[in-house]
Image (cartoon, rainbow, N blue to C red; front, top):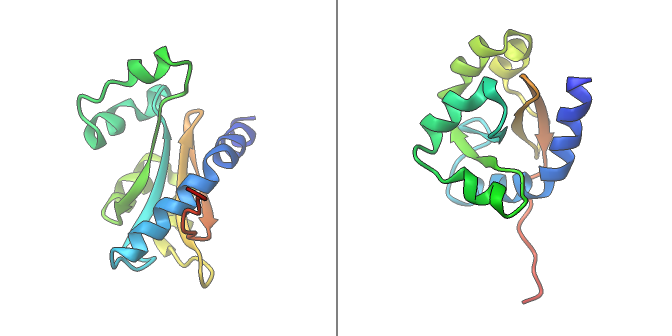
Length: 128
């Protein structure tokens, strides 16, 4: 059941994760130098990591607007060892980190665990 909820969480955030991955590549990072994280801020398993990545952020303001607080963004691959230890089930795939050509790695963290997804970096298109 947790994997299904993580899949739904991923689908909700997929477009934004693809845009963030595209920006990382535009800044000169290769797909092997970063992963894109998507973390459910309210998952108690990931609270400490959220505090390290975004110390002092006012998550309550997001909740007060009726929205779900989510950390999304690319991080350097140094986090891979931490995630591999925290979630041993994803360690083999995460440590290999060989996404198919043209894709990058995203890790979605919610419901007490983490899942790996491969995403297509995509620029943000707006008709403004």
